[in-house]
Length: 378
Ligand SMILES: Cc1cc2nc3c(=O)[nH]c(=O)nc-3n(C[C@H](O)[C@H](O)[C@H](O)COP(=O)(O)OP(=O)(O)OC[C@H]3O[C@@H](n4cnc5c(N)ncnc54)[C@H](O)[C@@H]3O)c2cc1C
Image (tube, rainbow, N blue to C red; front, top):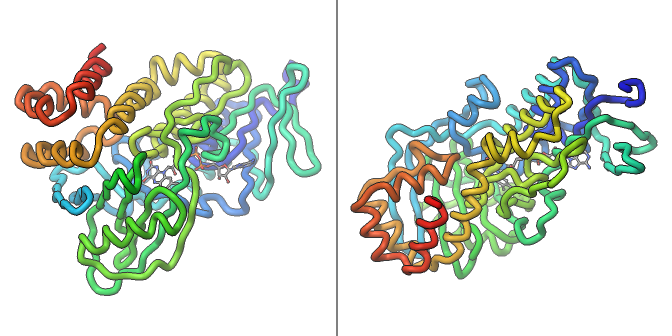
């Protein structure tokens, strides 16, 4: 009976995934409490803010969130540099703080309660969902855990990364850069993302000492000079979905549930969609069908494929990646243009081009190439 519960839905964490979950459930008329540990939504900001515009349109209809379109980039592999232009770019940099605040506002507008500065703790006792905050205890019919990367249960899929904000001295580059050096960063890469004029976000795996090596290399290759004016370390999720067998009344979504792209750790779109679906299903008393709706029939299907692509990436060394980049560059393949989010579609596209397949078969180790094909077309 509804009277037994303090709230029908409690959502822990007011990042994009949590706010959208709360928003959807409240919009359907449910009693919803959204709990956030920080005292301001969107702060601290530990994000690059790069997403596809198509993806953004699925979570919020607000062009003010877009800071710029990204229409070029460089790929640095050790000391080699490849330039790419994305003529019909679908890639944008967003104002992440603003987006988080607007999504929280939708939750409130739709009737959700929002508590800030309150650390929440979930526990199930005798089949009842309890959420504890300082000095309070709530009972909820459904609990949606959207508390971010710290809660992701698979240790090996969670990596520490550090992102600097650099103040650039003279020149400024308004494209993106990716720095691959598998000896330094076996699981991921370094990155450069333009921010406001004269500022750029530069980051890489590891703590500040490790990430500064990538920053130096990227600045050198882009012929830029600058000083770090902010540094923040946090976790990025690259281990793939955390597949819960039972989502009857509790589900982990967003970074907490591993709803990020395993190649890049980007989770704004997949996590937000995970939140929307969770909120909707809770409102319909159908949370038990979450796996089916997200992973089997929804966006999570591609994430499961992307885990396999990540496995292939891990099998490649720098020289294979270099050869791969050469082929793609020569063919003028712009992977960003079409499928920035759905990586498995992108790989399938590449593998449908007979001339590319021939070249790839020559440059990739045969085991890797065979594995890639069998995984994606099985
Ligand atoms: C350096 C870096 C760069 C990135 N760049 C990109 C990018 O360019 N594009 C992209 O798509 N993704 C990027 N990501 C990933 C992206 O930031 C996450 O996938 C996204 O924020 C996940 O959203 P979320 O709502 O699941 O979690 P979060 O945004 O982390 O929100 C979780 C919220 O829960 C709150 N919380 C935590 N614990 C509790 C608790 N116990 N009680 C109450 N509240 C709690 C937190 O304070 C936070 O507000 C990047 C990540 C990092 C670290």
